[in-house]
Image 1 (cartoon, rainbow over the protein chains, first blue to last red):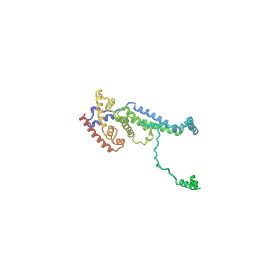
Image 2: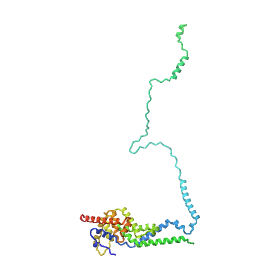
Image 3: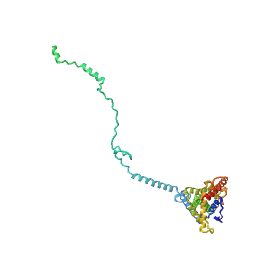
Length: 161
Length: 186
C-alpha cells in the first residue's frame, strides 16, 4: 500500500481530505487481531459464567436431578434465613429512656429562653363597685324578717305599763 | 455417561459462532481500527474501541445471521463507540496530535525533521477539520476511507445518500474557507 506523504499533498480544499486520507490509511498496530480475540475469549468466558444454569440444564450430572437442586435451594434458603434470625435474635430492644425535660436548645445564632415560661396575659374581668346580691337571697332575707317578731325595746315596754 | 443431543447441538452452534466471530475479527479489525483512529487519534484508545465493538458483537452474536453487510454494520458500531468516547473525553491539545502523528506516520524515507514538520502540518489541518460542524465533519472524515462508498457512508450515519453528498459539498467549501482564513491570519 502506498501512503500519500506530505510531499504530494494537495493545496486548498483538498488539503484536509489528503490529511484525512493519510490518517485513514495508517496501518493497524501489530498483534491487534490477537489482542481482540483474547478480549473476546475473556468476554465469552464471562458470558458462560453468567449463563451457567442454562448450560448445566442440558447436561447430565448430580446437579440435574430435581431433588438435588431443590435440596440445594432449600439449604441456601435455610442458611440465609438462619443468619437473618441469628442477627435478629441478638439485637436487644433498646430500653425506654426516662423522659427528662430538657431545656430547649436555641437555634444557632439565636437566644435561648433560659428556662423561663411564658404566661399569657388574660383579660381582666369587670370590677364591681358593690357586691352583687342575688334576688333569691334578698327574698330569703325579707321572709326571715317577717317571720321573726319585732323585738320591743325594753325602755318602751316599761313606760306602757 | 450419556451425552444429550441438545448439548451437542449447542456446542456446535457455539463453535460456529466463535468461528464466525474470529473470521470477522481477522477481516475487519484493521478497518475498524483505522476508523477509530481517525476520530480518536490515539492508538491505544482506538484499539480499545475496536475491542469494545467486537465485545458488543459477541453479546449480540445471535443476530449475526440477520446482518446484511457485516462491514458497514461493524463500522457503524465502532463509529458510535468512538463518537461517544470523544464526546466524553476532554478536548485534546494540538501538541498531543502532533506527537501521536509523528509517532504513527510512516517514515517513507523522510528525515526526523521532515516527519515532525509533516506531523505539525497534519495536526494543523485536523485542527481546522475539528472546527467544522459535526454533521459536515463526520461525512468528510468517513469520505476519506476509500473503501466506503457514499451509499455506505449514508448507512453508517443513518442518513440518505443525497444528504451525504450535500454535506460533503458544504464541508469542502467550509474547509477551503477555514484554511484560507488560517493562511491569511496565521
